[in-house]
Length: 337
Image 1 (tube, rainbow, N blue to C red):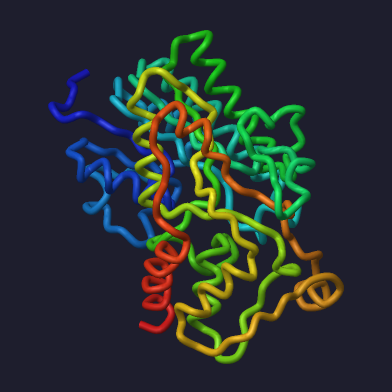
Image 2 (tube, rainbow, N blue to C red):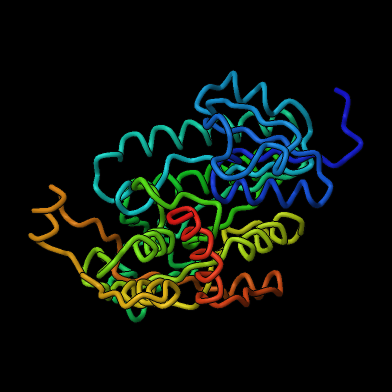
């Protein structure tokens, strides 16, 4: 197999939000980059912006995975998953597909990455794998890495992520695969899904504020808490973890700036410059409008970054408002031109 003179990187799921940004950064760093995704292209980047080769392929198919992991890549990033926002993950209607599709992808990827002797591989897990019982108090959730067991994720998406973390680390122990695992906490920013039901809360709030004349709808009572990490800081944390040799994870990658969802909505309203009210929709009113119970997830979730700081000596510095300002500007342009 002829190796490229440049370092080589493979981004699986590079047609998605985080994957597209990551592929662009790797290309800017001088890597030869191959992107593989089930989408025909990235929705907001041209292929030339993010990679040297874009392959449309279904990673549930082992023959596709064998074909795209065809060399000893210097870096492989496994971000491909069947996922979306609360309206996709928490209704229950997509549970079988989420588990089946993502598990198949990960089983294929870890096997063929090992077979091809890739040099390093990164797996993106999620904070959704943390136990529901530690996230009932919106003011004091526990998402320390060691709190993962006894396991009780609040969604099948989280259960699959937990399984696949263990899968990659088992292949490290048994076959020497150099795997790193991180648990992402609500990554957001421009050039990502902002409408259609699979968007995350920051994008949804920005879109609603950009579109609204009098009020924006917030699902639930708005007191549920989350932290959100801007995409550029996620990439920095991911690459730092990938390129060191002392620590595999799993480790949180997220922000510790926790806010109630109503506060996130208010930030979007402030950025819009409009005088908008927040309409919290929950209970029977929500069912009457949408035909299913309000999908909320856990009451509280916040990244705990002690372990990352201890092992890698880095922490994020961008405020939520700064990241939301960049995101709102882009989404407002999509909505209003």
